[in-house]
Length: 249
Ligand SMILES: Cc1cc2nc3c(=O)[nH]c(=O)nc-3n(C[C@H](O)[C@H](O)[C@H](O)COP(=O)(O)OP(=O)(O)OC[C@H]3O[C@@H](n4cnc5c(N)ncnc54)[C@H](O)[C@@H]3O)c2cc1C
Image (cartoon, rainbow, N blue to C red; front, side, top):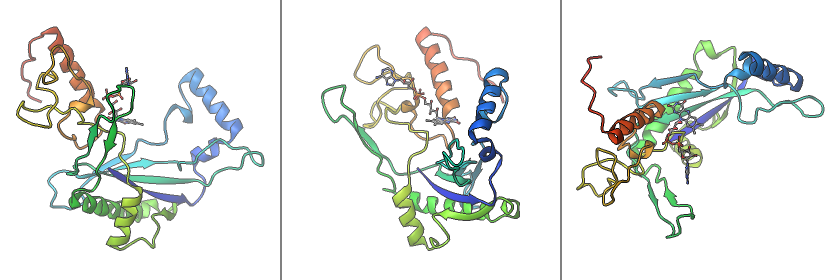
């Protein structure tokens, strides 16, 4: 689960300048023809893994940095007015205790399932996100940010007490890009386990699940590499290939 802080920039940044229709057209052509230019990348990618409390053994929060506001769009004044430039920091709780659930809503396989995220059923998750938001504010206060950061737009400086921050989190928290664990792996006696250690679905034959849903828990970061690892392992299982010999890293 995660919550975002939004900031106004002191002056329009490089991406904003390039978003004018004529300039962005040129950038797109550069990217298409030569693989270069500002459109060759997303205005994201900077991130940090931090501890909300020095007593934490390993990072329990992540900051995902967005170098453009959510309403960024190509413009050409006065026909399409420019947007106000800004950036955002999305803070993510990496080790939530709250557990959601996914259930069939109908016997019809075409009907969408019922998903209950159950955020903050553990009080600790709310506390972690509140502390994480404060850590992000601390980062934003650093002198290096001064030339860029004009003001915090949301939650805004008035939201400063625990109660006010919690209310903002409850109102705006969302899951990030890493849903997993809806078909989790576990021992046969575990009522929540769906697949065994060979990715086979309990109670069925010749059926495996191979994706992020089999992860028993979060890895505490972005999960794409783990998904690829599961897929590689599944390919070996299906082909009956022997285990790789242990390697010291
Ligand atoms: C915006 C975004 C950014 C991300 N950025 C990162 C990142 O920077 N680093 C990182 O590590 N991870 C990132 N992730 C997470 C990562 O991409 C996913 O966790 C990972 O792709 C999950 O793999 P998966 O195989 O479980 O599911 P998916 O990759 O979602 O694969 C599911 C596949 O099933 C197909 N499908 C769905 N329904 C059906 C159906 N009924 N019949 C047949 N096929 C179906 C879909 O088309 C899709 O191809 C990001 C995710 C998002 C959404």
